[in-house]
Amino acid sequence: MIDLYTASTPNGHKASILLEELGLPYTVHAIDLGSGAQKQPDYLRLNPNGRIPTIVDRDNGDFAVFESGAILLYLAEQYGPQSNWAFLPQDPKGRSEAIQWLMFQMGGIGPMQGQANVFFRYFPEKIQPAIDRYQKETKRLYTVLEQRLQDRDYLCGAGKGYYGIADIANFTWVNIHAWAGVEIDDLPNVRAWLERIRPRPAVQRGLAVPAKIDTATIVTAAQAIVVR
Image (cartoon, rainbow, N blue to C red):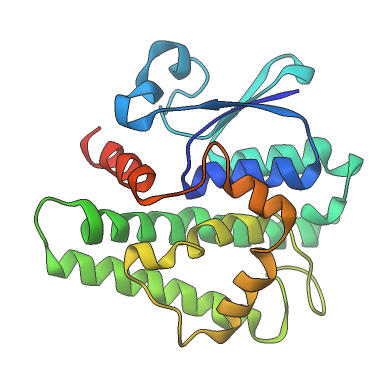
């Protein structure tokens, strides 16, 4: 059994989507970011960084994993053989390719789009140069995905590729592109990729954990990032 400590954010949804894809039983512990629950001592013992998501694997000695990318890797490696290794290949080159595109999201799209969210939606004053900078960099990163998806359905693998943790990580952020004020009308490959992933039953279930995204939830989460 997995304990999942999470909130309705792109990073939180990475973990819940993969748990659903793997068919693993898990218990959801919703973290109220607006109240600062992620900064309480009990939670900090699991996640010293005071962010979400965090998992605790009760079947593996209560092993705790924080950072969304690390959670994807842990779940795919620990439980992938029981379901479908395609989420993270075993061969060194395939594994490296998946990790490269995972890190692309962790080091690029996540931080840049996160800052676009903050300056475009929540910052108390409109600082246009900051808005422009982060929106443009987010869009540039989207164009990297557009090029990658030119002749493939998914980010990794030969031929049309396979759906795996790199897609899950990037999808959860690009899926809310409009909230950062970044449009994708001119990125047909990215749009088609989103439409391939979004209808998956496990994705739909994962996006509803711990609750479906709505404006109030996103605002609360972003305010927590700005002021804490």
